[in-house]
Length: 433
Ligand code: MEV
Image 1 (spheres, protein in one colour):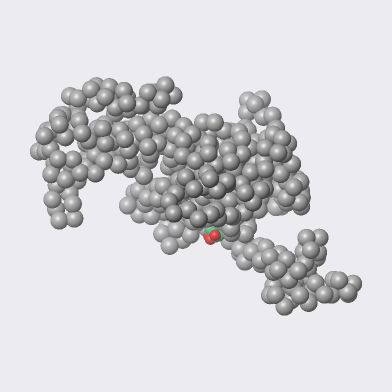
Image 2 (cartoon, protein in one colour):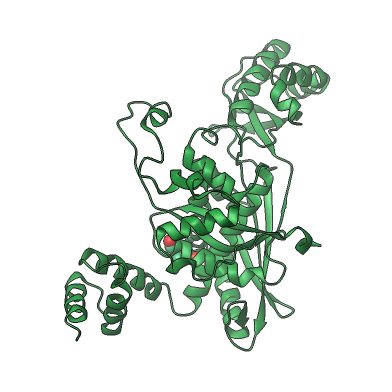
């Protein structure tokens, strides 16, 4: 059934060999856009000064980072070319490589929950046990009515207030405090604005109804109800291929995964690798990556012990990876409609619903984890990094784009990636030695 909807292919063989202009054209062709639509991505003026000036305070200019595209992604039967903004070498190549491994057995399968965010209303001197609970229960209908009334656009989009619950806590000195959680369906928004204003409105009402002072009123950046579950498989084969993995390699990946599941020191590093991919997409799409980072790590420790977000197991002839992650993302609001490059990247992704977008983002995280774990469990990551580092050094030594691969190959053969080796190899090349 999935292939019925499959109209475009993110398999762009040789994409990495193209010039930047050719890549833009290939992405435009994939996304059905004019290359001119994508000017925002290649132009140094991708973010106009006047737009930048309104995004923050004390603005003096713009700050650039590379934008690249990961290929090969297939999620729930649809293909995606994924924009990634990242300064770290290897990340985009690794994502594309792992997405290739994961695409053949139905691609990555992703399931997401409803986009429910939590707003917190804090009671520093809480009403006695039962009173606040009773007030919230009796006024639930009124609370819904009042909060929804002020957010007609959210209601029109199908979102709105979904419920409330009371949590009783004790502070570090043993004093009681209480929190009311309001649950808000924010649809395609990240939701911070709607939830913050609903929390403030709910605070006023609850204070009136209980006669108690309200403290903070703010969204929680742990969106425990807004999650994406992804699963990807690679077929096991006799040898390593573009879409198969040998059994012993899969076993080493499982071994590495079990290490990360058992040890917080390793889990943080594995999760950092996942966030390499996730954050890169979030930057390219103007998301609040700080919120997503905070949530991911809190969720990794949700059971009281920090662990790996993704798990890999050898199962019935497949290497199977699974990840469950909270993702508060928006396809509307924030800078999604005002930053030209962000707009272009959403057109390329072709996602309008925040949930579909989150499914792609989680898939990139899973793929990134597979690529890193595979490299670590086999040759280590330094070899790949050396190659990319050598490319930069060769270019810095003055190699023209067509000379770079030859200089790099010669440097790697000598196992030297310093500036002097680059200059020597460039001279040898030009002298025809
Ligand atoms: C480096 O940025 C990310 C890795 O350390 C992730 C990992 O160890 O799984 C390679």
